[in-house]
Length: 216
Image 1 (cartoon, one colour):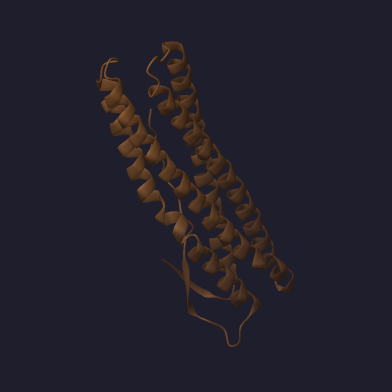
Image 2 (cartoon, rainbow, N blue to C red; image 1 turned 135 degrees about the vertical axis):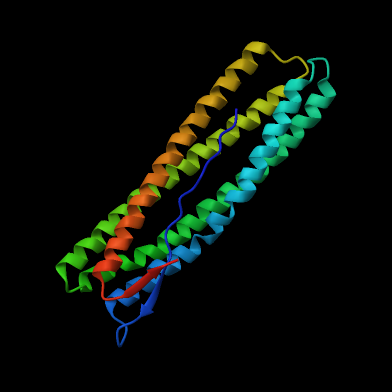
């Protein structure tokens, strides 16, 4: 009943030597790397989310080990799980705010592209923007799917708190939870693929620029 997500992050770059005066490339670099910084909050949510998921898995296992006549114990454990789910909702909201802020900062490079004199560099920049847009769309889908899974989880634990729980209703909700978990796993994989594609496009842009870049 539990999945383990992993997140691919955007590569970070440092200029080793800059041109004299701030070029368009350098101005774009500033926005690109500021965008990476704004995703720090998103990255920081991963560990606490994982810990909460593991905690809920342990709670669910404890509930599974109890008999149906141990209602009070089951109800108390279900309340603990719901509290954890509420925490995960907050963390998921933090993820969205971080990614939205990073995307807003990234979009500042778009009007600068037309100032690039080299056509090949300009095309590389446009590819990079397209890849970021695809990545952002994939994240939104992942985030929404994850929040839906949280709603399904909460409904499941609300059912477990019912003293006269119907087995059919419980089984139906477990199936819904598991199906939604698979949706989240698929969306997570897509997001990681889009992040890899963006990282490659960003690397190609930097390689074609006049900037001396190293990656952290």
